[in-house]
Length: 247
Image (cartoon, rainbow, N blue to C red; front, top):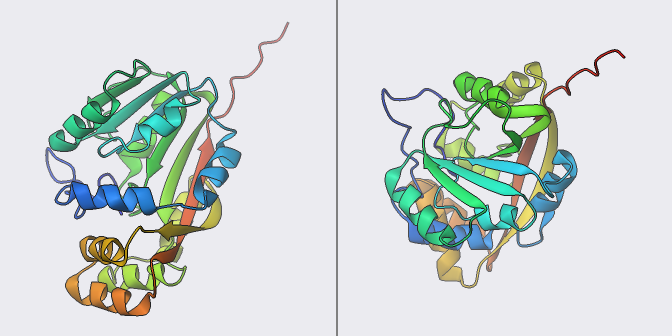
């Protein structure tokens, strides 16, 4: 749960992410466990139309975990991340791949030309809803006509993960956030995916960096084994294609 770009911003910096900023090694374990059944990636491909031969931007890319996955089909991939230590980790991960470039920047000030990207991807980075308007406007600037912005959000209504999120963020209003994105023309698709860990210890470590101590204890008690079902909200909005000039 990477809370880097959504919501009100502190002056001159992004809101610190409570997990990957402090425990990048454990977050790596989490990333490797997520979407073990491929449900989320499949839905992302379907809703965006894919990224074969496309120019892709991953907003809030963290330490670059998803960049090589996009680069497998894309023509170029740009990662944007505001936290310098994560930028360095991302550059180390992607060193030697000429298709991938990483910038230190925030979502509200993308260091990219107008109309230069086909797919913008922001995973668990915009889920505060109101407060991310500047980032959404910047996404519109960078997208080419016909390009798509995909916002991957955790689903606060899907059990069991959603109630744990609500316990730690009681002021978060899922219906209000849905309305926020709907008013801005986003389509919503709910996806349930499997997280599968190599060990019980890994699962418990991840829950401890994602939640308060009290909620983490509840989550650990609620989960048996090494797998966990997690719901996502996949929000997509396509920039209108340029009109065809009359002949």
